[in-house]
Each structure stands twice: as structure tokens, then as C-alpha cells.
Length: 64
Image (cartoon, rainbow, N blue to C red; front, side, top):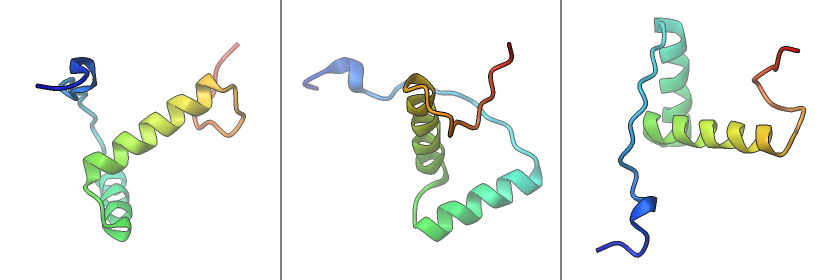
């Protein structure tokens, strides 16, 4: 059915945002012409890649 069954996106993650955060995300998704879930997925994977590459541009700050 699929060339690689592990590439099927069937794992869900729930995120909760306040009204201001949600409005920002929806506005950004609308501006880019994307679904909000697609935008958040891209942002999450971009952030994960930056962390793995050891970049300093990451939003996540590690505590020592």
C-alpha cells in the first residue's frame, strides 16, 4: 500500500494555545496560505532540525 509504512503520519500531538497565540498562528497560516496544522508541523520539524544541528538560532534554550 505504501512504499514505507513508517512514513505514514498517524501519530498525533495535542498543543494548547491561549487566544493571542492562536490568533498569531492562524494569521501566519492565512498569510502563507497554509493550514494551521501544516504550519505548526513545519515549524516543529525546523526547530528539531536546528537543535540536532547544534545551531544557536533555536527557540528552545537548554538549561545547564
